[in-house]
Length: 136
Image 1 (cartoon, rainbow, N blue to C red):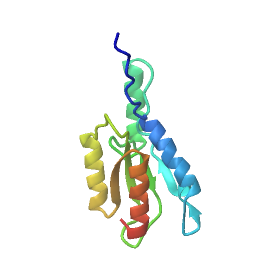
Image 2: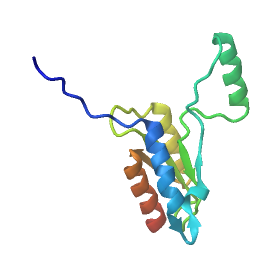
Image 3: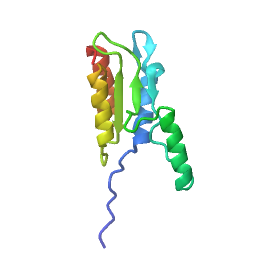
Image 4: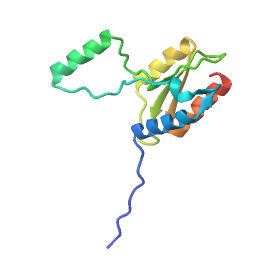
């Protein structure tokens, strides 16, 4: 009998995001905790209810400003080169960046924001650190 071999676990995007926030809670920039300025954009919530209820909810959200593809985080710390950083989080494996996410980031870059897509919290930490040290 062949022993069963466990595959390595791939952290979820939620786990990666929580790890990023834990790091940001203990990391300071110019005397301020980075976590105080790293804002999550809750754009990947699951709609509940039947098809009609979901359609009504989505229509309401769109009227309130919902943007498909908006990045998961906005770092509201301006630098000399950029007014802020839009950060899209992904898990380290088995993740896909949608066309809407790429388009959103392109629009933000076009008006002067820095953007990054990070696979895992460590890449996100590197993107934030690079942004804060080089300005975007």
